[in-house]
Length: 496
Ligand code: NAP
Image 1 (cartoon, protein in one colour):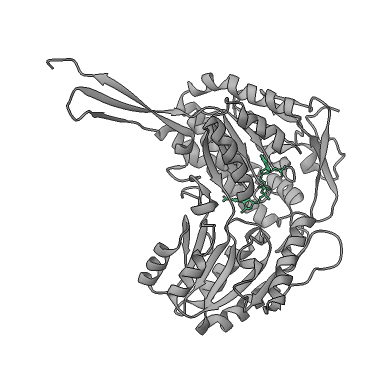
Image 2: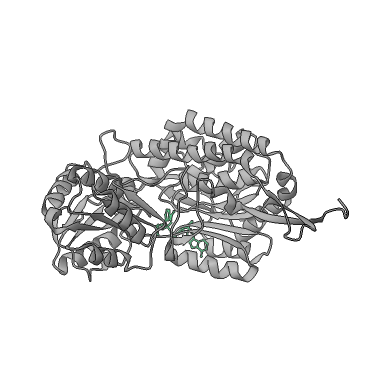
């Protein structure tokens, strides 16, 4: 059997059609040493497919393919790159149901959410198809009038793109699309829990006309070595990473050695502030969206809910009722609202953090206990009166747990919200526009949801401050991360 089809006879036709090899220089191939690893369904433990497990030598081949393709790709017309992205957008949307099923199978999120992620992921392809033809430079004159200053933009060069498992398709398109638009080639390493969505995307981009070697996909269980060699090579000119702050720091240290451009989308522990004058219905809706998207396995998840004491009881009771009504189950079932967590380690971490909060005096209004049976399920949980010294306040829970901390005044809540190394996103709920703007300005974060629990949008610059990251993805600035400035000094002719 070749690496171009799933090697485990999958019970799922949606998976059987996916190429499970390595994509290197336009060819799907096995790992050089023939190794494979299994991809599991977190709802059942079933092995869905085995995919090629790249060795360091395969990784080197992939980078060589990206380096080899760079010069010709950089010279292509922006409209050409734009149209490839546009075709890919259309194919992804045509195949939305298929891609959603693949995502649910390998990652666990309910089908409706997976469809939403496919549409969100596709939007990055469409957005950057539009941005590809809008890259502009500048033309001015030196102060003494002697020289022209012509500023152009060039692709930064071959890129290393590394993605996490929680948004298997969107975290890929958020990097791949601007890199293509800018004229960069790339090696993409998806998370080993969820490679199938990236492999499906790569095949769609090939079908859309992406030339060989522009996108190379390397699945591996040896990320540290494979990626470490890319980082040390001096040939990759940019790293764009989404994942934990700890791994981001390792990559930044490696990037320093070869002075690589770096974009980092790292962890968060978002504060969610409900003021005394908030509309409680809106705040509960916002909390459900900000907490329960992706079962709480999101960098944007509302993990510290600071609620003014005047409305804390009402908010907590209503949130607990909404959370308790959610149906937990296999994401493939239509009635499921909440799928499993990604793996056993992830679930154990959630339970440890909940137990710690309970021991420090919190009350579980709903959830808080591990269910019996297979799959890595965890019940939606609301914890009231969480003490500020609980580990939940300083550790990203990555699960469906909403800790509520009452507060009395705004200075106090801002100081507690900012008392963290992270700074990705915050949420503010109030009906007073001045208060909303004031609190938003005082939060040390890259993004604020004002009376909404959803901030992610391809047209907006996504990213954080402090140890939540460097750079932005999406919006008008998303393509800048993949471009360099070049300045031409051109003397003016004398006497004219
Ligand atoms: P992770 O453990 O940091 O892994 C992310 C990726 O990095 C995976 O592909 C992983 O592969 C790879 N990796 C691990 N060690 C590496 C190394 N030494 N060199 C190169 N690559 C390495 O994070 P995760 O658990 O998958 O994802 C959850 C984290 O991502 C959370 O902290 C979340 O907040 C963050 N996140 C941030 C954003 C954002 O936009 N800010 C979005 C989504 C998620 P292996 O698994 O094989 O090690």
